[in-house]
Image (cartoon, rainbow, N blue to C red; front, side):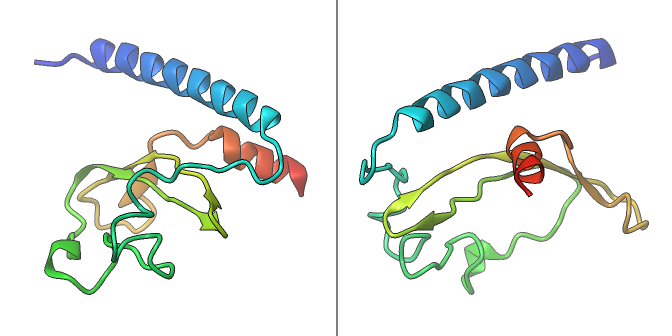
Length: 122
C-alpha cells in the first residue's frame, strides 16, 4: 500500500525531473537556428492524427476516442504546431467523482513553467 509520505516524495521527484526537462528544453530552444526542424514524434507519419490538417486521433469521431471522464489521473499531451514546427508537453489532469464543478477536475501542478512564462510575457 502506498503511503501519503511516499506519494509526496514521488511527487517531489516528479517535479524535479519535470524542472530539469524544462531547463533542457529551454537550453535547446535557445540554440535553435532559423528553419531548424523540430520532430513531432509519430504525428507527421500517422494519417488521421495531429499532422493531418489539425485533426486529433484522441478527439476524433471514432469509437476509440470516446473517453468518458472517469475519476483518476489523465495524461494530457497537447502537440501545438505550425508549418512543420511544434512542441509537445504533458500535464497531469486529476478527475474526481465530485458533483461540484469547481472540484471535479484540476491540474496536478497549477504552477507550470510555460504558463508562468506566458503570463510574464503579456
